[in-house]
Length: 229
Image (tube, rainbow, N blue to C red; front, side, top):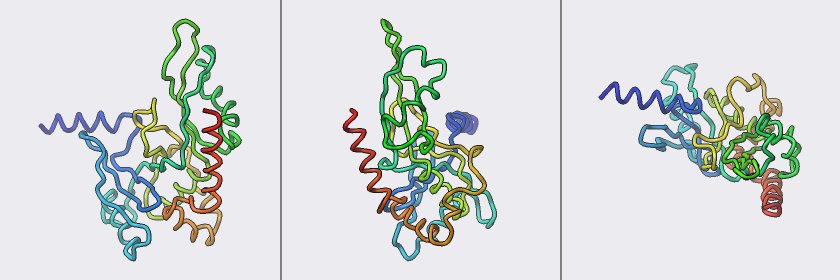
């Protein structure tokens, strides 16, 4: 039994570089999700607006990293559906040799952002036998939101390993890879915003930065996607 469980967990956490735990960020709570052989399970949560929010977050950190204050608490970060966009795009067959590069050049036509303002991932879904055309799933998230989420998690003692999406996206069985630990800068945009930005970071996960300018921009994001669909 023990060897079977070990093989199940080795297979699970080897897939897509998944961590055992993930922080699922929403406008109401920060949920701690444990990935198990039977599927993801929500183990605990910190509720925005609760007087116990700080202690609840600390409880989440201890559950991941133990009781030592400086113990590493590695987690993946899952962005909410409203902060990500996914589309299936058609590419010519020759794009397969450099699919990410080809997708990068198309980002500004399918989103209201410049490509350098986005984190994205691609997945080849199918190849049309008669024409060679490719169906490709493209998932994107604003880079400033990704960096802000990383800053937020670090501020509370977590060690972000990967930023992905909480909602299922076709072509990404383990979630799109928007950012990984090797790419994280020691100091991100969110941290450079100073005290005012960090005060607003309570609103990052009170709405993950959604409630004002980002909300308007994401509405535009959805409108452009709908118009192009």
